[in-house]
Image (tube, rainbow, N blue to C red; front, top):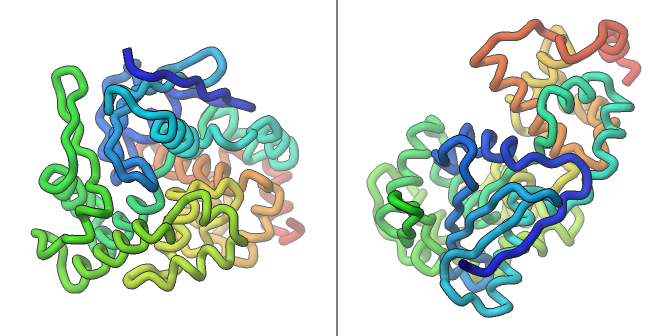
Length: 320
């Protein structure tokens, strides 16, 4: 048995909900069997040593087991624990999340619809930044296939029972990237810049969350190939900032329009106004809304079904 650790959930949490999110999260390409433990493999931040982890349900939240390396030192074990905790949003106290639903009836409906759902992120801001470059101006499925090939050819492979997981390559390897099938234009150059930033600590999750959000976003947009949309992705789904709204994400505006039964997607100013009630879990709420939008795409639901008509009227009237 490997080194184990328990992650305590403060507030609602369901590992099964996290697994379902990963299954629909194209960058992760996760294909775990239903009801089985969550199997992860990723380069550990700062040391960039590839680790393989198994995560199971636990009465207190989740239990992680480091399967490889076989005898991790205390520093590596602590880093793995912190990274898994952040990936599953268990590093945030969610005890007051239900209060968001008490303030906003739409969100209360989504909380009932998706009990225990918290954001699940990229394994690191480094990998989120790499995904942003790979996926620039191409379809998501095409980008996911390229990212998977990079992991297969350049990353480390670890065994999980009778199957293999290909971890995304650490920045040491990506820093030497030349041409690669599917990476057009300056993408290889930009990926090398992302790798260099990771090695320099500029993509460290704790560092990005320790500075003011506007400053973190400004620093991220200094990276070649990273614009405002990508910077928000890296901060919210890489560093896992729990309380921010991606104003450059058009699908969020569509999700808000659907859930709140608005005649059109809200502009940034109205979206910021609506999202004030979601504090201090604005990122968490955006994940609920995006999940709802995806469900609607697969199984259409009635617009505004999350929301009482009185609340929809108030929003349309512009009073919140």
